Length: 357
Image (cartoon, rainbow, N blue to C red; front, side, top):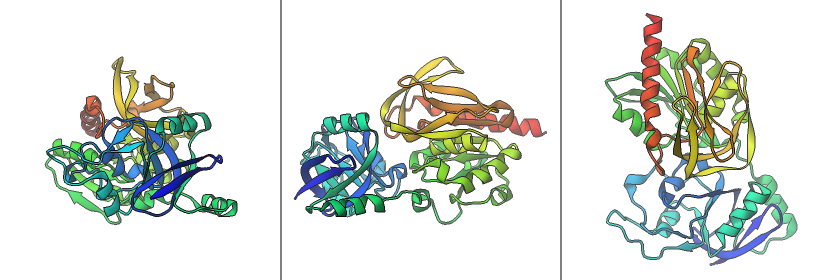
């Protein structure tokens, strides 16, 4: 069905709606990955966003249930140039179109996504509307003004505490919209995980006698989560070892006295070079964020930086047993070169336990 993408700056792109037919509004962002569209679709960090894929053909290898990063699609819409009509892969269980229909998510195709990406790079991330209707100016303004994403973390976080058994270190897992491969990485290291909803109090976490706390990725603006930041401060005061990834990195920065800023168009893709300052090595990383650390906390030092734009990609506080990264060491999609950071964190926890003794 014919449709149109209306941007907040007034530009209109004609195309074809596929998947679920309907109307949606969201924040328009782009991803430079050549593969990994299924992991992207099911990544809770994209909640409330409309994602433009720069690679021209999407859906080539279909969809399989093994590569899910959560139990459903979280983004508002997927925007592509061309859909692969006949996916070909021995693991394929359904088509991209069928997966979008199953999850009642809108797809939009037959649009020049590389030009659209240039618009986002020039003008910054902005709101967009996908519709099959001819909307009046007032209707467009009403739809843009009605969009907000402040409760995104609440939407994607679990509602109750649950445990994932393991024989190793006890880990408190703060789930703000965690990707499944983060859990897989800790399971491979035999950690016993106690998974907490986003609004769990520090006192409750400490009652479970955890050896360290992990702060996950998630959607939205970290500045909107001041109540969460207050609880992280309490954990820091107890010198609880902490690892933060993506949103977890930003929240930790706030808890330590730093701040974050909204980036013009963010980092999203599996090809972002980052320098590890401690090891003097450059890694290609998987990234998905629209905010970055602005003010460096006095208690912390920068451990990683982006080679593309110099933004802060990680912090460390050795005396407080804290390490954070802005990128995704668990990848999926993207390179797995930085999985060593999970092992490094477990060593930080062991070191903290020795200090207590």
